[in-house]
Length: 208
Image (cartoon, rainbow, N blue to C red):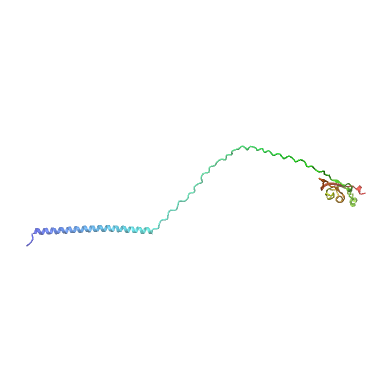
């Protein structure tokens, strides 16, 4: 028994709608898959770009730091010139120093009696006249300084002023040292050595 036509048409319509729905569903699924794939691809590309950037950053050496700025020499600070001021000060008061009084002089000691130098007259003879001086008519006065010992002898004779003849002066000193004697002076009773001056006059009259 055959189905009516209107049932056939309804079956066809239902089949057609099911096919359309299936197609639409497939299209939606494909669109969703494509969107997901696109999103995944974008994430992958971003990761790839990050990796490339990291590799490039590692390959690029770090830039050297810029050189420090040059040291600027600061000018010296201004020097203030202070004028010199001289303040006159009054001189200190004079100090008066009073010298201490000298101690009183000790009383004079009792001095024992002292005897002066006295020549022994019998020894004061004239020296002999040198014969050569007589022939040459040599004369004059010999002034001598003699040193007298504590025994009264002459142990040293020096010519202070010559007669003009060295021969006469030597003869005078030799005679005084050999013949003349003194009574030595005393100090507190003890004889002391002294020096004195004597003279001998050479006169040709005494030579004859």
